[in-house]
Length: 105
Image (cartoon, rainbow, N blue to C red; front, top):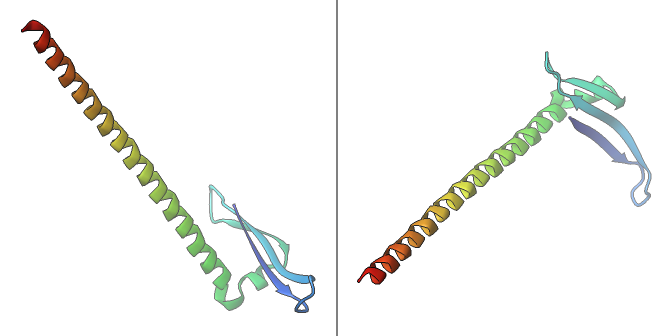
């Protein structure tokens, strides 16, 4: 779920703002996402041909890409850890073999 808001400062330097649009995007399993408008309506949302929606889609895609990169990085870290463990085991085995050869001579 994502939220969207548009705030306009009424008078510069004064901490009073006028909120023109406050909406929440609700993902729906059985169809298109729905919007819940707290302030404003679909008319404000569609200003500029739905530019707000397009910008939100870009942000959502960027967040998804970030998540995908993080998942790949975690997988690579796990693979690296596995390879390091195998290398440690191999070196340990070599030491044991050397020690056993030294004792038998």
